[in-house]
View (cartoon, rainbow, N blue to C red):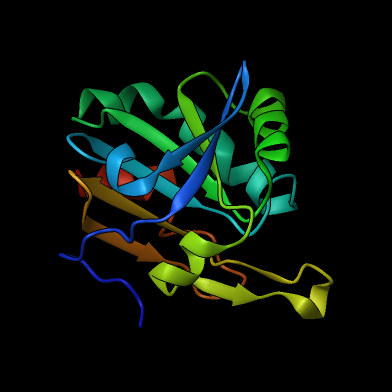
Length: 159
């Protein structure tokens, strides 16, 4: 079953990429007490994710924070080393990357996808959500191959 507006995020382990190396975090603790603009991509360093998705959130970070977002988080079914390198190459310190290396978060939200036909295995769908104190307030899931409703611009329009 796919997560919906009003649902609490599933409680799974994610791995935060930090300057000191990977740090395990529990999603229930991580999202507690703050407003988070969360976006998910099928994979770090993939074309749309690197050319449009991450740069859009980097560009709009100040505007999102001015509208009440405490933190901007990107997630993908990649390991923390890949996520950290992706943020270092195309992101900024305004973006926190949480690796979902085993796809547990994607599966638990019901937002996983099978990209085996492209040689990528099971990944996450492309989406964005606004999360307040661990509860989904907005959910924007892209149709396969699209990039519009999960963009930073769309999220800004929802705040």
